[in-house]
Length: 252
Image (tube, rainbow, N blue to C red; front, top):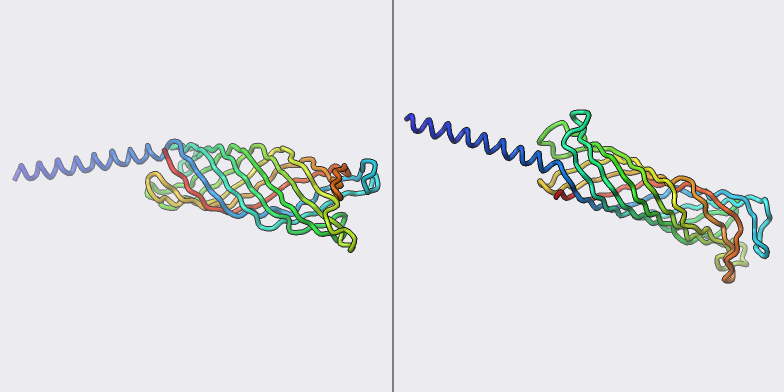
């Protein structure tokens, strides 16, 4: 009888020790490096390229007149890749921080627009490349939590490339006469909110909404009719967008 009790006691202690080791190992695995990849839809806000005409010789226009190009976009796409580090503890017990270095690319076609409020046909596209550093906070209230909400934001540099063409709907022009050109680099910031579903010890699936802004940069209005490439005006604009997407994280 004593032997049976001893065996049961030993088994209980061994089981408890094994569970403790497993819990510790799982906790250790939760801290460390990971990779993530995601994609989704990107909704670019309308652009208001604002400037003043200062045309080169031979380029149509009136010096000193406004050069305001309004453009709207179709729904685009975004893809992202990042390397991150998950920290075990944060300053607040239920917030678990993560740091990431991310590269993203987004693109959308032009849906329409106007020059100085006129009636023109627009075509072309816009794309954005960003490199950012970010800090996220996972909201963790239970060690067995399967869905983890999170929020965060980042800052870095962004390059916006525009290839926007238009011509007046006057029955005369049938090909682009002017375009908005440029690929300037500017400061970019973003804020994000999302939720992570734990698939296994090494894999997570997440869904996220994000607002991104590349701050004011310079573009050019160019006269492009008949193979020309003449300067018309300097333009300025912010590039803002809201995106939604899903992704996968894997720890290593």
